[in-house]
Length: 243
Image (cartoon, rainbow, N blue to C red; front, top):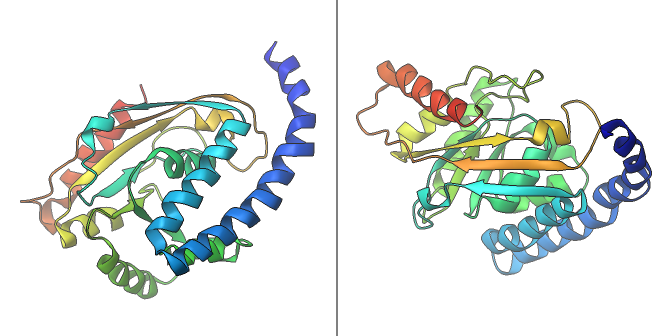
């Protein structure tokens, strides 16, 4: 039955959804985000155009979204948000349903994406050059001034999408920023997106997805010497939501 439904879905995907995402909607929302950022500030552009862009595409897929643990988020608190990464569809889910103002740490190559790259830059998202350690450190250092007054910073600590669905090892950048800024870490588990859009494919297909916000992790008392313990603890929390 799934194979039959998959075949029926293909004309909709190729003739409507993909042209809509890569064409009109992203162009319009990107331009709207740039204008709002210039007139009302980056937070308005992100919360209005960014959320609308993400939710529109999620509903049109269509995908059903379940959000758990919303009570664990204090909208007045800034966090270092860390989430597992299984699919490009994670971007729609986080942008549409995270519910707090945030700055995304993303690879520099995404700056070249038409309209979307410029819009993300104007919204204050953070591009880093992963091939240049010193440049990446400088970008993160500059980003720290933006993480105030309830604005959070979001990392995929695996560094890339998991091809197998298994949780990869975590890199240290998010955790070092949490220590430097004295901010709690907000672990987020995403499930279901890999089936909706597998990595390195355009094999989009509707289905249920879930995002779970875990209790924030206090980093006070953590040092560089004990950072590995913090990373292991946060990774285990995210892993617990994937069962």
